[in-house]
Image (cartoon, rainbow, N blue to C red; front, side):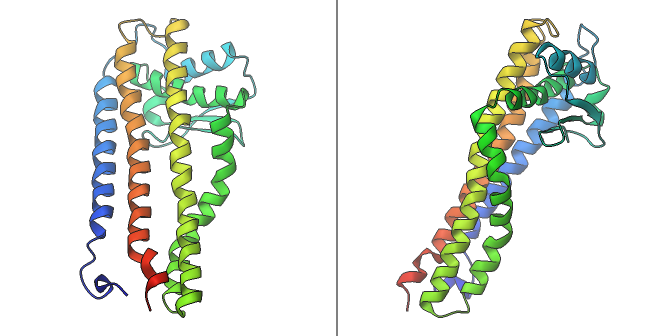
Length: 236
Protein backbone atom coordinates (compact mmCIF):
# COMPACT_ATOMS: atom_id res chain seq x y z
CA UNK A 1 0.00 0.00 0.00
CA UNK A 2 1.14 3.59 -0.53
CA UNK A 3 2.90 5.16 2.45
CA UNK A 4 0.08 7.58 3.15
CA UNK A 5 -2.22 4.82 4.33
CA UNK A 6 -0.14 4.89 7.53
CA UNK A 7 0.31 8.60 7.95
CA UNK A 8 -0.47 11.90 6.32
CA UNK A 9 -2.63 11.62 3.23
CA UNK A 10 -1.51 14.32 0.76
CA UNK A 11 -4.48 13.62 -1.51
CA UNK A 12 -6.76 15.02 1.19
CA UNK A 13 -5.71 18.42 -0.10
CA UNK A 14 -8.02 17.75 -3.06
CA UNK A 15 -10.96 17.33 -0.69
CA UNK A 16 -10.06 20.56 1.09
CA UNK A 17 -9.83 22.43 -2.21
CA UNK A 18 -13.26 21.13 -3.20
CA UNK A 19 -14.74 22.11 0.16
CA UNK A 20 -13.29 25.63 -0.04
CA UNK A 21 -14.63 26.10 -3.58
CA UNK A 22 -18.11 25.02 -2.45
CA UNK A 23 -18.01 27.29 0.60
CA UNK A 24 -16.99 30.29 -1.49
CA UNK A 25 -19.72 29.60 -4.06
CA UNK A 26 -22.35 29.13 -1.35
CA UNK A 27 -21.34 32.36 0.40
CA UNK A 28 -21.43 34.25 -2.87
CA UNK A 29 -24.93 33.11 -3.86
CA UNK A 30 -26.28 33.95 -0.40
CA UNK A 31 -24.72 37.41 -0.36
CA UNK A 32 -25.84 38.14 -3.93
CA UNK A 33 -29.38 36.94 -3.26
CA UNK A 34 -29.58 38.94 -0.04
CA UNK A 35 -28.31 42.06 -1.80
CA UNK A 36 -30.87 41.96 -4.60
CA UNK A 37 -33.64 40.86 -2.27
CA UNK A 38 -33.64 44.50 -1.23
CA UNK A 39 -34.58 45.60 -4.76
CA UNK A 40 -38.38 45.59 -5.10
CA UNK A 41 -39.55 44.77 -8.62
CA UNK A 42 -41.37 47.50 -10.52
CA UNK A 43 -44.18 45.08 -11.37
CA UNK A 44 -44.75 44.35 -7.68
CA UNK A 45 -45.27 40.67 -8.47
CA UNK A 46 -44.22 38.08 -5.93
CA UNK A 47 -42.20 35.01 -6.77
CA UNK A 48 -45.33 32.86 -6.61
CA UNK A 49 -47.30 35.21 -8.86
CA UNK A 50 -44.49 35.37 -11.38
CA UNK A 51 -44.23 31.58 -11.39
CA UNK A 52 -47.97 31.17 -12.02
CA UNK A 53 -47.86 33.66 -14.87
CA UNK A 54 -44.83 32.03 -16.51
CA UNK A 55 -46.27 28.53 -16.23
CA UNK A 56 -49.63 29.57 -17.66
CA UNK A 57 -48.03 31.47 -20.52
CA UNK A 58 -46.12 28.31 -21.38
CA UNK A 59 -49.32 26.30 -21.41
CA UNK A 60 -48.45 24.45 -18.22
CA UNK A 61 -51.50 24.05 -16.00
CA UNK A 62 -50.73 20.79 -14.21
CA UNK A 63 -47.83 22.11 -12.11
CA UNK A 64 -48.69 23.36 -8.63
CA UNK A 65 -46.75 26.25 -7.11
CA UNK A 66 -46.10 25.39 -3.46
CA UNK A 67 -44.66 27.22 -0.46
CA UNK A 68 -41.91 25.37 1.41
CA UNK A 69 -39.83 26.36 4.41
CA UNK A 70 -36.22 27.45 4.32
CA UNK A 71 -34.11 29.86 2.33
CA UNK A 72 -32.98 29.06 -1.22
CA UNK A 73 -34.48 25.58 -0.94
CA UNK A 74 -36.43 26.19 -4.15
CA UNK A 75 -36.77 23.31 -6.59
CA UNK A 76 -39.00 21.76 -9.22
CA UNK A 77 -40.19 18.20 -8.59
CA UNK A 78 -40.91 16.54 -11.96
CA UNK A 79 -42.44 13.39 -10.45
CA UNK A 80 -45.00 15.29 -8.35
CA UNK A 81 -45.19 18.24 -10.75
CA UNK A 82 -44.76 20.78 -8.00
CA UNK A 83 -42.78 23.99 -8.18
CA UNK A 84 -41.58 24.55 -4.63
CA UNK A 85 -40.66 28.08 -3.58
CA UNK A 86 -38.96 28.91 -0.29
CA UNK A 87 -39.86 31.50 2.33
CA UNK A 88 -37.48 34.03 0.77
CA UNK A 89 -38.99 33.62 -2.71
CA UNK A 90 -42.66 32.66 -2.54
CA UNK A 91 -44.09 35.87 -1.09
CA UNK A 92 -41.27 38.27 -1.93
CA UNK A 93 -41.57 40.83 -4.72
CA UNK A 94 -37.83 41.39 -5.10
CA UNK A 95 -35.97 40.99 -8.39
CA UNK A 96 -33.97 38.20 -6.75
CA UNK A 97 -37.06 36.24 -5.73
CA UNK A 98 -38.69 36.61 -9.14
CA UNK A 99 -35.48 35.44 -10.81
CA UNK A 100 -35.27 32.30 -8.68
CA UNK A 101 -38.95 31.53 -9.26
CA UNK A 102 -38.50 31.98 -13.01
CA UNK A 103 -35.48 29.69 -12.93
CA UNK A 104 -37.56 26.91 -11.38
CA UNK A 105 -40.21 27.53 -14.02
CA UNK A 106 -37.43 26.99 -16.53
CA UNK A 107 -37.11 23.43 -15.24
CA UNK A 108 -40.86 22.88 -15.58
CA UNK A 109 -40.67 24.08 -19.18
CA UNK A 110 -37.69 21.78 -19.79
CA UNK A 111 -39.81 18.91 -18.48
CA UNK A 112 -42.70 19.87 -20.74
CA UNK A 113 -40.44 20.00 -23.79
CA UNK A 114 -38.55 16.81 -22.90
CA UNK A 115 -35.26 18.68 -22.74
CA UNK A 116 -32.66 15.94 -23.26
CA UNK A 117 -30.15 16.85 -20.51
CA UNK A 118 -33.00 17.01 -17.95
CA UNK A 119 -34.31 13.63 -19.10
CA UNK A 120 -30.80 12.21 -18.85
CA UNK A 121 -30.27 13.67 -15.38
CA UNK A 122 -33.57 12.24 -14.16
CA UNK A 123 -32.56 8.81 -15.48
CA UNK A 124 -29.17 9.03 -13.77
CA UNK A 125 -30.56 10.00 -10.33
CA UNK A 126 -31.20 6.46 -8.98
CA UNK A 127 -27.86 5.17 -10.26
CA UNK A 128 -26.01 8.20 -8.87
CA UNK A 129 -27.69 7.82 -5.48
CA UNK A 130 -26.82 4.12 -5.27
CA UNK A 131 -23.32 4.78 -6.55
CA UNK A 132 -22.54 7.48 -3.99
CA UNK A 133 -23.87 5.22 -1.21
CA UNK A 134 -21.92 2.10 -2.23
CA UNK A 135 -18.66 3.68 -3.40
CA UNK A 136 -16.78 3.97 -0.11
CA UNK A 137 -18.08 0.71 1.43
CA UNK A 138 -16.91 -1.20 -1.65
CA UNK A 139 -13.52 0.49 -1.56
CA UNK A 140 -13.00 -0.10 2.16
CA UNK A 141 -14.11 -3.73 1.95
CA UNK A 142 -11.77 -4.22 -1.00
CA UNK A 143 -8.79 -3.27 1.18
CA UNK A 144 -9.28 -6.42 3.25
CA UNK A 145 -9.31 -8.86 0.34
CA UNK A 146 -6.49 -10.32 -1.69
CA UNK A 147 -5.00 -8.48 -4.61
CA UNK A 148 -7.37 -9.57 -7.39
CA UNK A 149 -10.63 -9.54 -5.42
CA UNK A 150 -9.71 -6.36 -3.60
CA UNK A 151 -8.80 -4.59 -6.83
CA UNK A 152 -12.10 -5.64 -8.37
CA UNK A 153 -14.10 -4.26 -5.43
CA UNK A 154 -12.10 -1.05 -5.31
CA UNK A 155 -12.49 -0.45 -9.03
CA UNK A 156 -16.20 -1.14 -8.70
CA UNK A 157 -16.37 1.43 -5.90
CA UNK A 158 -14.57 4.02 -8.02
CA UNK A 159 -16.94 3.26 -10.90
CA UNK A 160 -19.93 3.76 -8.58
CA UNK A 161 -18.60 7.12 -7.48
CA UNK A 162 -18.07 8.14 -11.10
CA UNK A 163 -21.84 7.95 -11.64
CA UNK A 164 -22.26 10.59 -8.93
CA UNK A 165 -19.71 12.74 -10.77
CA UNK A 166 -21.56 12.18 -14.05
CA UNK A 167 -24.75 13.41 -12.40
CA UNK A 168 -23.00 16.62 -11.34
CA UNK A 169 -21.72 17.19 -14.86
CA UNK A 170 -25.10 16.58 -16.51
CA UNK A 171 -26.65 19.00 -14.02
CA UNK A 172 -24.61 21.91 -15.40
CA UNK A 173 -26.34 22.32 -18.81
CA UNK A 174 -29.71 21.76 -17.13
CA UNK A 175 -29.16 24.63 -14.70
CA UNK A 176 -27.57 26.99 -17.23
CA UNK A 177 -30.41 26.41 -19.68
CA UNK A 178 -33.06 27.01 -17.00
CA UNK A 179 -31.46 30.37 -16.16
CA UNK A 180 -31.32 31.38 -19.83
CA UNK A 181 -34.97 30.50 -20.24
CA UNK A 182 -35.84 32.46 -17.10
CA UNK A 183 -34.09 35.64 -18.20
CA UNK A 184 -35.61 35.46 -21.67
CA UNK A 185 -39.15 34.94 -20.36
CA UNK A 186 -38.87 37.65 -17.70
CA UNK A 187 -37.81 40.17 -20.32
CA UNK A 188 -40.19 38.99 -23.04
CA UNK A 189 -43.25 39.12 -20.78
CA UNK A 190 -42.24 42.37 -19.12
CA UNK A 191 -42.23 40.86 -15.64
CA UNK A 192 -38.90 42.62 -15.12
CA UNK A 193 -37.74 45.75 -16.90
CA UNK A 194 -34.52 46.05 -18.88
CA UNK A 195 -32.97 47.87 -15.94
CA UNK A 196 -33.91 45.05 -13.53
CA UNK A 197 -32.76 42.08 -15.60
CA UNK A 198 -29.02 42.67 -14.96
CA UNK A 199 -29.67 42.33 -11.21
CA UNK A 200 -31.52 39.06 -11.69
CA UNK A 201 -28.80 37.84 -14.04
CA UNK A 202 -26.24 38.34 -11.26
CA UNK A 203 -28.35 36.29 -8.85
CA UNK A 204 -28.78 33.42 -11.30
CA UNK A 205 -25.12 33.52 -12.29
CA UNK A 206 -24.10 33.23 -8.63
CA UNK A 207 -26.51 30.33 -8.19
CA UNK A 208 -25.09 28.60 -11.27
CA UNK A 209 -21.58 28.82 -9.82
CA UNK A 210 -22.67 26.63 -6.89
CA UNK A 211 -23.33 23.82 -9.37
CA UNK A 212 -19.97 24.39 -11.02
CA UNK A 213 -18.35 24.22 -7.59
CA UNK A 214 -20.15 20.99 -6.73
CA UNK A 215 -19.05 19.42 -10.01
CA UNK A 216 -15.45 20.53 -9.42
CA UNK A 217 -15.50 19.11 -5.89
CA UNK A 218 -16.86 15.79 -7.16
CA UNK A 219 -14.19 15.58 -9.86
CA UNK A 220 -11.46 16.30 -7.29
CA UNK A 221 -12.84 13.58 -5.02
CA UNK A 222 -12.85 11.12 -7.92
CA UNK A 223 -9.26 12.09 -8.73
CA UNK A 224 -8.36 11.45 -5.10
CA UNK A 225 -9.87 7.96 -5.24
CA UNK A 226 -7.91 7.16 -8.38
CA UNK A 227 -4.67 8.43 -6.85
CA UNK A 228 -5.26 6.54 -3.59
CA UNK A 229 -6.38 3.23 -4.98
CA UNK A 230 -5.72 3.22 -8.72
CA UNK A 231 -2.27 1.70 -8.23
CA UNK A 232 -3.48 -1.19 -6.13
CA UNK A 233 -3.72 -3.40 -9.23
CA UNK A 234 0.04 -3.02 -9.63
CA UNK A 235 0.93 -3.46 -5.94
CA UNK A 236 1.83 -6.80 -4.46
